[in-house]
Amino acid sequence: MEGRPDRSWGIRAVGEPEPPGRRQAEGPGGFLWIYSTMQFDDFSIVCILQEDRVGNRVIEDATRVWREGSGKDDDALGGFDHELSFAPGTRSVDGAMLTFTAPSGATTEVTVTPLIASHLALGTGYGMDTDWRHGMYQGPLAAQHLAFDLSDPETWARTYGLVDHLARFELDGEIGYGLFEVAVLGPHDRYGFTRRSER
Picture (tube, helix red, strand yellow):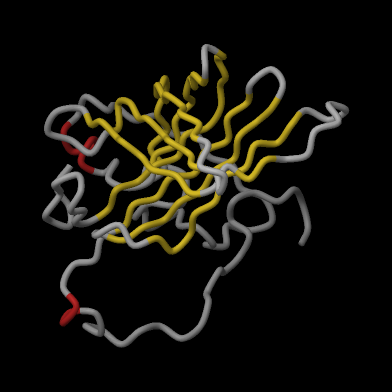
């Protein structure tokens, strides 16, 4: 590849496409995703979770990574539970509690406060823009700058999907900062979402 790489690294096709309507008999699926990296003074926590509409987990992992030179081994924090709160009438997460339960039974609770949201459906290649999709070849080097007015209802409707938050984390009185990535797509029984696309 010539030039500096960007997010248009060619085609990211995997396997053959499914035939049209293949999942129609299954009804609308649901998908909850959490990925977070939290940096505190002496350690970081990295966690990832994917579950379906009824809470069956496909991916689930949480690890505390101690600062280099601490002499401590990384801790497997085990499985974790989530309690998300949403801005009224939306899927916009305005707070969360993550509770990690280690194999020993020890629990670790982290309070999450989202600070700034980056809606990945807008201008990042992860949305439905016809001219800039994830994996779409743009030539040897392409750069783009876009601005969006989130107070515009039509623009706001396009934010449906994955959101990366700069977030504040609190754990036993310690404060950390980092990424809180979350999406609740389609129906999700626990949080009361019943349709594919309500905001």
